[in-house]
Image (cartoon, rainbow, N blue to C red; front, side, top):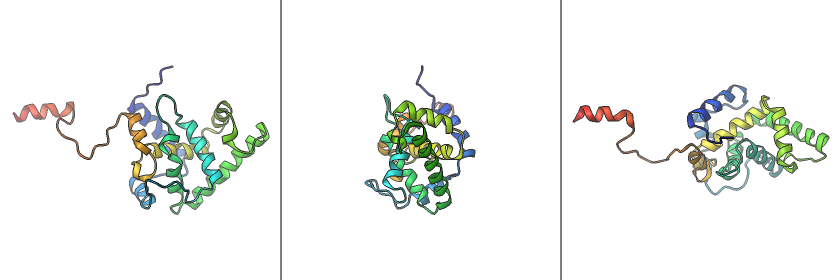
Amino acid sequence: MNKALSRRTFLRNSSRILGRSCVVLTTPMVLSACKEVTNGASEFKIFSIDEGAEYAAIAARIVPSDESPGASEAGVVFFMDNVLSDGREPEYEILKEGLQNLKSICTERFGVTNFYSLNLSQQDQLLREIEGGEFFETVRYLTIAGMLSLPEYQGNKNNVGFQMLGFENRHAWGAPYGFYDIDYQLESE
């Protein structure tokens, strides 16, 4: 199986989940939600420790770690917590209810109380079953947003999301900017 995924394909596939998420973020919303975040934060604002572990486990299956870092290394669970703690109680309640439903399935089917206690194949099986629902699509959306956010907003720790896409986060770009500028440069000479 070819694990290489073009940036364009990744972004195109990621954009389709927006319509099923109960949380929709614009750039100003992300900036507002994350204005108080510090890089060294390790405590949750709204999640309990158990919720944080559950969301971290779900995110780790959405963007798993393999030969490259995934959602765990990017710290997306802290991004999720920051976004949901910024006046998004209705959305947080939807996620809490969805998480409780997922935990109920874990108990009924596997005899464990937590999603993170399941082995990876069991986790993948349950996530495939709930894929397409509001809970899963919202967690997936927040995971991807956390992977691609600026590191100062608590996600994308150590720029792992940018590295995954091959994006160089530079303060300023110098010429030549790209192949499309070569014609302009030739005309100027």
